[in-house]
Image 1 (tube, rainbow, N blue to C red):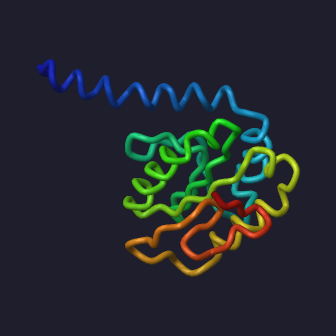
Image 2: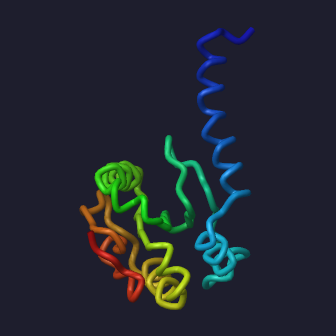
Length: 150
């Protein structure tokens, strides 16, 4: 028999997964464009997942093999920089590198975005613990032309 506490915990874990699944069916234009570039191991053979649950956060895209999270940010992220910084810190504490790109960058400079991501994927393994990084960087690997600072 499942206790009420266990049932509550299972239900709480299920909600983010359900939300992540629903988000896969409502991608932004930038997410659609980016997914088309990285799906089916199209990016140097690296496998990406989209709207993936890492701890209590849903990340836009992740390459689990290289522990690289890619976040595509719309305009609302300019007002939530502190939240994004905390979130990135939690992801880094779990061993992930985080790269952030503006949606507009993805739509207008996909080659630069992909080049930056490939540099991070093919570069040296990241140190543990990870250093504090700004947006558009992944543990010392430059995001190339897709880089942005805040």
